[in-house]
Each structure stands twice: as C-alpha cells, then as structure tokens.
Length: 357
Length: 73
Image 1 (tube, rainbow over the protein chains, first blue to last red):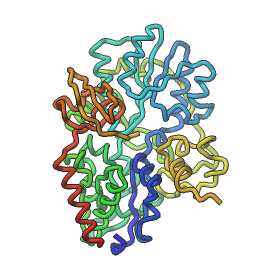
Image 2: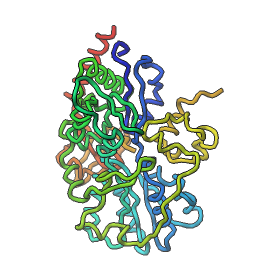
Image 3: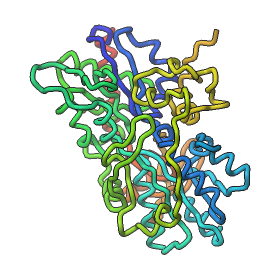
Image 4: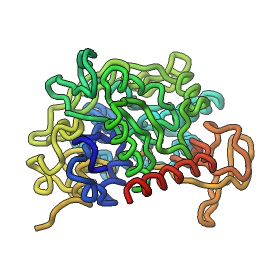
C-alpha cells in the first residue's frame, strides 16, 4: 500500500471512525496514507437549533419524548435532554424505534414524540414505524424527524466540481473544502442505498470510493482497493463489503424511504443549510409530524465559543487541533456533540488515540 | 449509529422474526427484508434486519484478502 501515491481518504461513517480509532489502524498505515473523519456521526451533524427544539418539546407539558441513547447527553443552548429529564421531563431511551408503538400503548395519557436522527441506514426503519403507526391509527404519537442524507453533504463538502479538463485525479479547490483523494464509503448506508447515488464522486470529482465493512481487515482491504484505483488512474465506486452490500442496495428499504419521506433542505452543524439533504414526512403522513402538531418557536442557536466541531466535521481540523480538546471538552464533560456521541470523531480520538503525557 | 450485527433467523412470523446470536434470542422486525427465511443470516440494526448476508460474496472478499496478502508478501 505504501508504494501508491500520497493519499488522503475520508470516512463518512461514525462506526468507521470508531473502528479505525479502536483498532489503531492509523499507526499501521504507511506515512503516505492518511485518514480523515468527515460528517459521519448523525448526532454530531444535528444542528444546535434542532437539539434546542427537541429539548423544548421534551419540556412541554404532557409530552413523552423517546429517542436513541446517543441523543440525550448532547448539550443544547440550555441544558440537554438528560438535564430536562432530571428536571422532570419524561425522556425515554429506546434501542429499536419500533418500541415506540408499545410505549405509546402504555402511555395513553401522554403525547409521545419520537426524536429521530440518523442517515439512510436508520431512516427506512422510521419509515416502517410511521407506516405501521398510520395503519394502526395511533393518535397520540408523532415524530420529530431530523434525518440526514449522505450524498448531498458529500457534494456540499467537496464544493464546485473541478474543471474536468486534463486527466488524473484532480482536487477540489473550493475554499473550506478538505483536500481528499477518495472516500471510504459507509458500509451500512450503502447496504440500503447501493452505490448508484455516489457515482457522482467519480464522474464529477474524479474521486474513487470503496464501500467498506467494519472489521479492521475490511477497512484495510478497502484502503488497498482505493490505492489500487489511484495507481491505475481510476475513480470508480467499488465494493469491498460484498457479503452485505449489493450494487443496487436494498430496494424494499428504498421504497419505504420514498413512500414516507421527501427530501428537504436541512441545516448541518458547522456546515450550514444544504438543499435536499434532510427528510420530512410526506403529506400522507403529515399527521405524524411533531413540527405540525406542536407550535414551537426556538431561537436560532449561537455557536458554542471555541468549539471546532464544525471544522472537525468538515475534515478541516483533526480533533486534537481544537483548542478545547481534552481540556475544557472531554467525554465526561463535553462541550460539543463530536465529544458526546461515542461515534463522534473527538470522542473516538480522545478514547483511543490520545497521547497521554 | 449505523452499527449492525449479523444474526441467524430461527423463526419467521409475519413482519417479525426470531433471531439468534451467541445463544441469545431476540425478536426483530423484517419490514426491510420481507423475503428472508429461517436459516438466513441477516444484519441487525436497531431492531430491524437491514441486509441479507451472502456466503458466496463473503468468500469473494476472503479471496481478495488473500490476493492482498500474496501481493504484499
């Protein structure tokens, strides 16, 4: 692998970030190959104002807010969901979103809201739950949908495509874009979407992508395949995780996504608004949209002073380059979401890669 | 967040399945993989099966890994 050209590859999946950090892979790679974390942690990319909305919702009288475990400690402008719970709000953690139906049955006197984050791996599950809720005519259940889509954020991150004249890998030149030579593609997002939605990486940016699994072997194989593409001047979408990922993805899951959701503009922490990068429930399911059911006015949130989560999410800074990293911001007392979520690049870096003096 | 683990289907029942991993059994949803059958290995994410595991393709990956080993030795 070391014989290939110097290369910077980005992973856009929090589970990859953790797998790479935990296995110590970076230390084993030749100095010519470096790995950068991108916006792959769904909790981390959730905008502060959306977190504030969720917390405000949890504090509404009669509301029971259920969500995934990672969300409850994320600091909003005034406290977190965990703090709201400590102050009396009814906040529950669910492993499977399907459990929210049982929870709703058990709490007929509450307005149950499921706060839903995640990329294309998780969104079809929510689509299935919403469909089931509609079929069974649940009345006291709604969803605060904060799902995000990966292809649009990758495109936004790369900026304007470089001129396609000339041959060989060209680098994006937009200010604020990381310099990259390819992507380690998210295995489970691709299990759902397939590789088609990502072909623009090769076609418009001449960047190769290899879909990777989550064992160290899987990741090494994908990196080797990326280097092989670079050496051969190719920029294609390849799959190194064939035991799970098919080129066409999971069509049933894609249909569920299409049926329940429509793409909408979404705001990403540290990146800003990106057209068609989020999901909203379609008209047929609008009765289950928490934003329609509750009228919540939440002020736009100010940036957290000193927190470089935005730059870290865009791959412009590595976690230790943030002035707060390991000092004011630790997993025990996190300032930004990249340190809260176990899949955040700051948390992974703190836990597995920190050099302790 | 996108963590998923392989499990084996031991029972199928409408939209549900009973899966087993290391002797632990769990009821999961099959909305995303309605055609999966008893004996199939599936990837489990947040209580839902999201992908079917393919033995032949797994072999292909192992072959590729072997190729990497040969090339690097």
